[in-house]
Image (cartoon, rainbow, N blue to C red; front, top):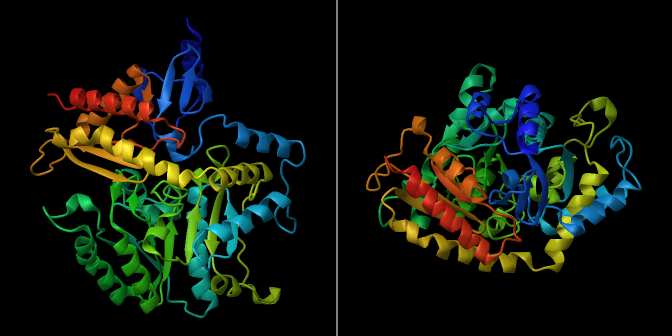
Length: 450
């Protein structure tokens, strides 16, 4: 028995994997990984896989990046962790200073959690608590977009709208106000993206007019609804949303957990709309894919609503044991160093254009309904009927066929339902993009054959 096979057997005896129907592994082999380098992952039998999904969207500068590894190793010899209640350390202070400097103007306070879902939970509580401290006790609701996704914990699920993850737990969740979004998949033929964003903002305007008195905040994933299948919308929607939230006295929460740190073509997606949200949630790429860390950025008006004498009991008491871990902060600092010194955003423009060229031929595929592309994210949606964009029945698991084909060819493509997407590390080379395009093309052809 190979070492791969041995590890798979041991794994299945004890592990319960995330986002997985474990019974699938009776016929769909696990892939144990021994090491990583750059865009490549290598199993224990020596087979390599190009990581086209950045290991769940977290890896920015490749596996085993020497600069990030060195920074983490140096920190490990000095301080591995310390309580952040009443104590502090240099990496978190420097990281906070640098995040304040690079995020949209006005976001000058940093609150840390362990992961993206926890950042969303903290932000929902912080928004509600702000209004409570301000005497507006009627504000208890959140407004969210259809097909949105913000995490797996109960509060994050409540403000999401992907039924695959949410519907089971419905009885446990608070009720959110959900309005249609503006993703371009539903545009009329020939319709302008800006005009479509303006037309589709009408339901949000109506929801704010009707519910502003009870709404704490609107929460959105700026520009790309990732878990919904990389559905994308125009920055004009965010401009209209910022203005409307100000007018109706409702917070705007930007969930940049997946789309931040260069994924959309700018360092943060909100930059493309020229807006500053009241809260910005960050995670995933924050540490370059090394260690769990998440942050909530906000402004002084929010902060001051909690700044009071202890006896008033207005403090924000949300906490996590590993909040602001020094090792994770060091990985984040090294990640920001690479952005600062290597012109990453500019270099990514060439890679982004190459992804578009390499997949352009799929526009004519009889079972491709749309190719969506923004920055370093490209998505190809498979459909049963191209003219009507009728989806394949989900039970057919067409995307899984692409996944299996890609693994056989040495690529990690993990479709979202019927959506094949590329979200690779930024160290990918043009010829590696061409390889992924060939694998995806062949996989889509195989998956859409009856």
